[in-house]
Length: 373
Ligand code: NAI
Ligand code: MG
Image (cartoon, rainbow, N blue to C red; front, side, top):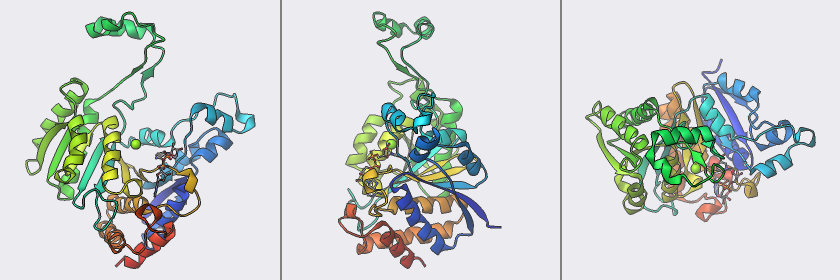
């Protein structure tokens, strides 16, 4: 029996292209793993009215971790129109498979490394090496939302907050509410994971980016918990920056940051900004990590216009493979792969279109394989 069981969910569009690149590299590394491919994405929405069939959830449950490509999602009307005729009007609702997986497996940390590899012409600066820890299960993306706002909810809020009275002349229909829910547990575990990661990988500095001066209760809770936890890690520097200032400082002096911890929506925005500093979507991997399961996915989407053309940059996906190897405990293999990726970028002979070259997705993967030790 193989040492690991890994689920592969290529999904839609270029998800397949980059997954094939990942397999070229994994085969060359001879990781002792069994790979099982699963169904996810738009195709299954159209055919079955479910972009993440139950059998796929079961498959994930039987594996150690998952490598994920990308999925296509479209607005409500288009989703309904593309459903197989016999499924239309039967109440099927599209939902985000990736969000569902994060919730189902409680993958509470979204880790996004942003590193400028030497020689990448797309680098904003050549000395950036930071990792964003984004809380992945709560905050503004909890999905607890209201429109129109139920009268009973308004009455309850009125009772507890004078500030709500300012909106007294607005009808329920003319108001929408999205809840920003933080839990102490949620704050603690993302912060703790960031400090543990710092210790494990020899990083020196953790910065929490929130907005406690304005969003006093939620951001405040994150900051208060972070301060307490930071006491347990005297070997690691700790500081706090307001999220708006953080967005600016990431442009001004990104080289000063090491690990940045933040909540769900702030992290979503900040990590896209940071990704652009080191070459954009083709260079941005991410890991969704819980206590018992992990899913690795490039930050980019399915880029339909390039689907199946094997033109896009697989580097983000190959860096996901590196993160997966690390998470599995195959540290040497992970470092070997990262060195090989770095060499290919630095040499600059084999480059996809986004880097100004004309090599294909699999050419890059094969070149990385040549550089493995
Ligand atoms: P996208 O990330 O798919 O592509 C935007 C553009 O970025 C592409 O047209 C391409 O020019 C470039 N790009 C993306 N990945 C690249 C790579 N590896 N190498 C080189 N260039 C790359 O975002 P878009 O176009 O907004 O969305 C397309 C579909 O993907 C939509 O259906 C969207 O909902 C979905 N999506 C899925 C995500 C996921 O699976 N996690 C994340 C973002 C979007
Ligand atoms: Mg995003």
